Length: 410
Ligand SMILES: Cc1cc2nc3c(=O)[nH]c(=O)nc-3n(C[C@H](O)[C@H](O)[C@H](O)COP(=O)(O)OP(=O)(O)OC[C@H]3O[C@@H](n4cnc5c(N)ncnc54)[C@H](O)[C@@H]3O)c2cc1C
Image (cartoon, rainbow, N blue to C red):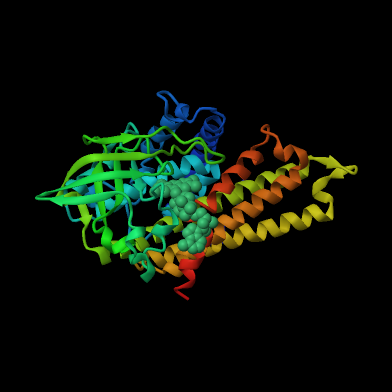
C-alpha cells in the first residue's frame, strides 16, 4: 500500500531506489517469503531451485547488493547519502523480513571486508559486487551455544572472568592462526555463506575482553556446517551452526588482533546491526498495519465493516502512530550514525532496535486481534507476520540485554 512520505527532502535518486525496492519487494520478495515460510523442512529453503536463489539473483541484477560497498571496489556507496540504504531496507522488509535479513547480512559482511586495509580481503567485497549468481554470501558468526548475550556485555569489567571466555579459540602459530570451536545454530546464512565475519577468543584468561575478529572464506579445510535450523518465524532466513576443527588461516585474516579494539568493534558492529534491525522491523510493522487496515475495511460484522467500529478505529490509529514513530526515529538515528562512523551513537542504536522490534510485535499482535480467528489461520499473511515479528525482539541481541547495555550510555 505504501505510506505518505513525510520526508520532503528526498532526492529523485532516493525516491527511485525506494520505488524500485518496493516493486522488487512486492513482485519477488513477498511471494518468495510466503513460499519459503511454508516449507516444512528448512533444508528445502536452500535447496537448488528454491525461491531464495531466484531472489538472490534478482537482487544482484538490480545492483542493490552494491549499495554499501565503496565505488573503488565495485560498489555504489555514496557517503553523502545514508538514507538510500534505509529506504531500500524498509521496503525489502515490507516484502519479507526473513528474505530481507538474508540479503542484508550478506551485504554487511562484505561492507566490513571493504573497510579492511588488506587487499585480498577487500577483493572479496569486489567478488561480491561482481557476483551475478547469488553465490557469494556472507554471515556474521558471533553467537556460540554457550555465549549469546555475553557478547553484548563484553565491555563490562565483570566480563574479564575467564569463565566467560568465548569457546571458539584462535591460537597463533607463526604466520597463521588455528581455529577450534563452534558458532551456534543462530548464525544467519550459516549453512550457505561463503565468507564469515567471525568473533573469536584470542586470550581466554581475559574472558570476553580477550577477543579478536577474523574475516575468512568458509571453504577452508576443517570448516563444517550443522543442519539448517527449524524455527517459529523468519523461516525464509537460513540459519545454522558453523564448526571449526583445526582450521588454519593466514595471519592477515585476523583483521582485529588488539583486544580493546575488538571490544570497540563489537559495539560498532552491533550499532550497525541494530540499525539494520530497526529498518527491517519498521518494514514489517508497516506491512502488518496495512494488512489490518485492508482487512478491517472488508470484514463485515454488526452490519458494517469492522473498520467502522470505534474499538477497531482506535486500535488502527494507535498502530499507525507507532509505525510512523518507528520510521521517523529510525531515519533520524541512521542519518546521524552514518555521518559519525564508525561508532555513531550506541545509545540510539540500541534504542531504535528495541523500539522498532517492540513496535513490530505490538502492531502485528494488534493486527491479529483485528483479524479475529482469521488472524490465527495460515490462509492469512498476518499469521506469518506475527511469527516473524516475534523473532525481532531476540535477533541481533535480546532486547533486555540491549537495553541494559544501552542504559549504561545514558
Ligand atoms: C532471527 C535471528 C537471527 C540471528 N542472527 C544471528 C547471526 O546472524 N549471527 C549470530 O551470531 N547470532 C545470530 N542470532 C543470535 C542472537 O544474537 C542471540 O539469540 C541473542 O544475542 C540472544 O542470545 P541467546 O539466544 O543465547 O540468549 P541468552 O543470552 O541465553 O539470553 C536468554 C535470556 O537471559 C537474559 N540474559 C542473558 N544474559 C543476561 C545478563 N548478563 N543479565 C541479564 N539478563 C541476561 C536475556 O535478556 C534473555 O532474556 C540470531 C537470532 C535470531 C533470533
